[in-house]
Length: 423
Image (cartoon, rainbow, N blue to C red; front, side):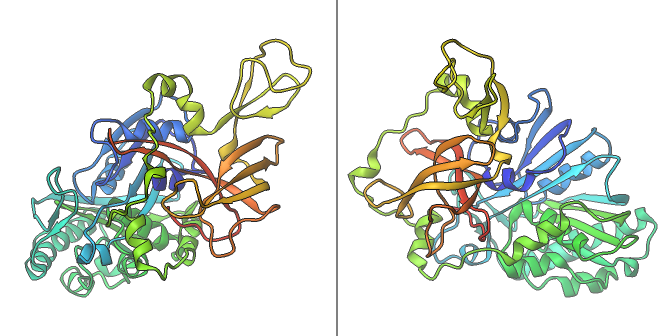
């Protein structure tokens, strides 16, 4: 959820929002609705969640391109994996987003879809961690019966020769498939999705969209770019770039960011692959009340503060402004602090309060617009945090109610000039 929000920040305001994931935190609760609130979008926008296969985001993109109005597709994945399994080594966590309109920088020339119930990998309620089948069977079936025929059909529908493709973003079922796919289809362009998998792992529903952005960042106006999503079939689309793709360079730049962990046990703990005993301090009851979320949830997850009649900005809002001369309720103007820059004015590293990644960093943050908010800090490296550091808000999980299987979200302050990692 938080990865999808981060990917979608800064994109235009849509008429529809689609959330794509095979590892969404809630089974019976709309993540797309949470996305709308987190981005402070108009509640009247159409929303929908898609799942079921790793190509769900590409399928949603295809449908949006066929005409559903301005549409935002945001994908985010954090798939659970068993410690020591191949998926734990090959999968990655990531988010990607696409905005579809008639003003885009890429023109859809043709597409093809193929539905095929190939059980190469699956997860279920009984087994949340992915289970993968024999690699040779998956490779031969996926390439010859699913991916290659769909790509050939898409090129034919677009009226282009496969050799004309300049760059490809094809989600491979397993590493090392591109050479055979290239031979069977005639697409000789490099597959950016394969390089992405080597760099950050397989990002599931977000993988093909992220690879497409990276491919567009390295392409030129007029180039043909192939996008193909795989999972329970294949969706393939051929685009011609009509200009510089907004956000593509920023997406490609994310590959140079990140903080490497040299402690495998820390990694296992943070990914939930092992359960550690954190002691009694971790047993704090954190039940979320639906009534509180109803009253304040949109302001909380959207990080929306208020500007009073005198121009002062505060978070959270209150009936009477936090101002010495305020004596009566006032009407606030909404101000979204998630889009504002800030600096740390006080900081504490607490090793007594529970956090899954000690120490627990928190302090007072001064926003450039005048607001001051007490916030938790995240994404710190060995240097920690200091007064005066520039920070930016990132949506994160605020609390987990393990007993009831519920989680709440809020914004934490992360270094503005350092790499970003998901925690």
